[in-house]
Structures are given as C-alpha cells and as structure tokens.
Length: 567
Image (tube, rainbow, N blue to C red; front, side, top):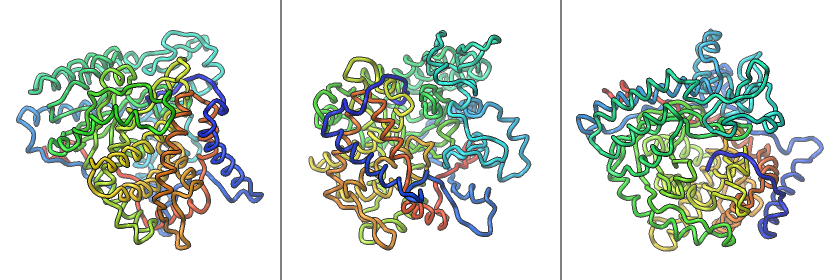
C-alpha cells in the first residue's frame, strides 16, 4: 500500500474526464509559476520568526513538548509488568532507524558541541530538517541523500535497475557494494543481528506475561519474525487480536524514508493502551467498507476489489514512540498492515492515537484556525470532526485499488517513489467523501460543515510538514486542486472561507483523478502532478510564515517512557 516501485504509462491513458481535471490543474499551476521575476512559486520553507533567538532556537520552536500519559488503572497487574518491557523493546527501534536514516549516530552527535543543535539533530534522526525538505542545518553537511542509508551514496537509479542480485526488490534489505564494487543486498536481520535478538527476547518475555491469548500469539510470532524478516504470520495474528488492551506495533514498517524508490521499510515502535469505550463507538463503521467501496466516485473498473471485512477501528492512547514514527512530524493514526495479501484477506486495523491527536488539535490546529479561518466559520472547528477526518483517512487506505487494472502488479510498484504521496492524498480525500456519505445516511452526528472546515484547517497544518513528507505533498496537491475548483476563497485579511457546495464537488472530482491514476499505474501522470503541485505560492507561504511568527508550533516532541507514566 505504501511501498512504490515500477511500471510506465502516460497521462493520456486515464479517462478524459479525469485527464481534464489534471491538465487544468497542472497547466494553471505551470502558467502561474512562469512569471519572469520567478516570485509566484517556491518550495515550502518553514520559518519561525523571532528577532531575539538564534536560528537553532527558532528550529526548536517548531516543536512543542507534550507529555504522553494514560490511565493505567485499566491495566491488569500482568499488563503493568509488561508495559516497561514493551517500552524497552520499542526503544531499541531508535538505533535501528538512526542507522537507516543517517548511518552514524554517535559520530554526528559527538561532533556537535552546541546543545540546541544536538537536540535538533536528535529530533530529526540526523542533520537534516524533516520539516524543511530534508535540508541540512549543519554547515559542511550536504542535503540528505534520497536513498538515506539504504543504498550506496554513489549509486544511480540506472545502475540499480540494470543490476541483478538476490533480494534486490525486498523491502527488508540494505543495498551495498562488495569488494569489486558490485551491488548486493544484506537482510535487516543480518545487519541488525545482535539488536533484533535483544528485541525478540524482550517480546518473548512480554508474551509470557500476556493474559490475552491473541496478544500472546502475536508477541510470540513477532519475536520470531524479527529474526528472519518474515512478517506475514505475525501480521495475520495482529489482525486477529480483538480483546487486548495493551498493544505494540514494532518492526520495519513504513517506506517513507526511501525517496529513491519508496521501497525500503524503516524500523519503528509504538506502545499503545486501548481506550475500550471509544473503540466500541467506532466498531460499527468497519461494516460499511464494502458498501462505501461500491459507491466511490470513479468508473467501476477502478473499484472491483472487495476490501476485507475483518477490519477494526480502535482508539488508543499512545505511551511511547520510537524510530521512524518519532522523527519530524508525528503520526496520530495508524493503518496497518501494509502487506497487500493480508489486506485483501483480513483488511487492516485503524488505530486512532487519541491523546496525541488531542495534543495536536489543542496546541496546533485551533491556533491555526484562529489565524487563517474566516471568523464566522471557526465555529465549525471541532475535535470530533478532527478525529473523524483522521479516522476515515485511515479507513480510506483500505478502499480503492491495490492492483493496477492491466494486471501488471501493485499500485505501489507501478508508482514507485510517488506512491506514498498519492496514497496519502487518496486517503485524505476519500476519507472526507466517506464522511459525507455517512452523514447523508444519518450514521454520523453533527454537521458535515464541521468536517469540511476542520479539513481545510488541517491542510494548513499538514502543508507545514514540508515537501519531503508524503503527507505534505498530498496536502499541497489538494490545496492547489481545491483552489482551482473554487472550494475556498482567500479574504483580504488573510483568512480563508470554505465554499461548501464547491468543496463537495471538488472532493468527488479529485477522488476520481487519484483513483484513476492509481488504477492505471500511471507513473508519468502522477510524477507530473506531484512535480507541478509540490510548490507553493508566495501568498500561502506568507500565511504560513505568519503562523511561525506567532510561535504556533508545526509539530510535537514527547516526554515519554516509564518515568512519564509514573511507573
């Protein structure tokens, strides 16, 4: 779902209706960007303006501290014993991701004397600002390699594509050179043999304490999977868990860090405590997936796949982040597993990280809305709408199409490095479409206007993640599409007004465009869309800079772990 690779088609292969939308969007952006003084567009560049602070203090001010806590009274005695063990296991993902992102954690940290710079390096897992296009913030260090540390720094795409070697396409290998300069792959479990053995032993220890049979089985199988990178059995066991209160998501999972092919998975860990009451409120929505799939606003051939009906929607408090999910902008919802075979057999689980979501709403989204949303529409900014928009974003990952309609393979393989950005854009827009449908059926309370205005404010929040983020790219594409369709207008005072009817129309049109591009495996069409829409007007940049000047943070960093929980 989120691991791109190959297949080639041109934009003229999508249906004429969708093609027109893309061509209008691409052409309008390109025309607007061709002013002689080159002032109309520029890449996203986050700025926090404070006259009396150093540049590095300004970088740190992009983040606000949040303490991760939860009600531990819901845990059994054995679960309380398990929690520190799971946190210790997850914490070991930090070093593995450091190697994947940068390669030499101790070397870079030991070379820095300034405390603020060292802290910012730790936030970013390297000397590159993840909220500013992965640009270097340390003099003498170049910008981040597109392949991070997964590939040799001097490797070209042409060389990789011509080379033949074992496990070349695996998402669980590093690509290296032998003594003769030839490319070869080394599996994660070999590169990290000592580390994964330690994590495996910790998961076994936790499994011995598990009261819940499903959790015990999952922890046991996951402990074995880390030793050979065969994760499907543990993914299936994770999908079968229903009654557990404690949970851990751990291992090499997302592929965002690989900007060459989007094909190498990064290590991360979440430790979670299920909110049983909120989860019960969400359980009913999984049953709507087949019906919602049939109703998608796209030609029938792009929605023939049937989503798994065993999908779960659950709400959790997250009490520990580590590795990929803890770098730069922090995840507030999870949709896993990414294995397409598991998805088609079992569906996915959507985990809403309620406490982290609440922190971002209170500390970031509401202050953004007070500055950028027209005053009489601020009444529509609600946490429930933010929660629903985020939740149905994750649900929407399970809808649409996983395999191209020409039978040549998966969408992620066809769209390569652009797959993640388009997939995130699909999930955003289809999530909103699904909310509209459920409101129309009377199955969601409140007004759909709440979701639309909160969605608009959410675009400003996510665009600030920068061009290096798949979520940031997805939001830039949507912002430009919505602007072209008149879904919003910008007032003279720098606030934005949602035009409700036009937003509903634009929502359906963009859904059609994205699903068609995915189904056709149209790499060139998606590349054109991402390239033309991955830039931002000076007008919008100035509005984002106002948020920085007001010290509205871009994201959060966590005080977390055993001590934060009072254990």
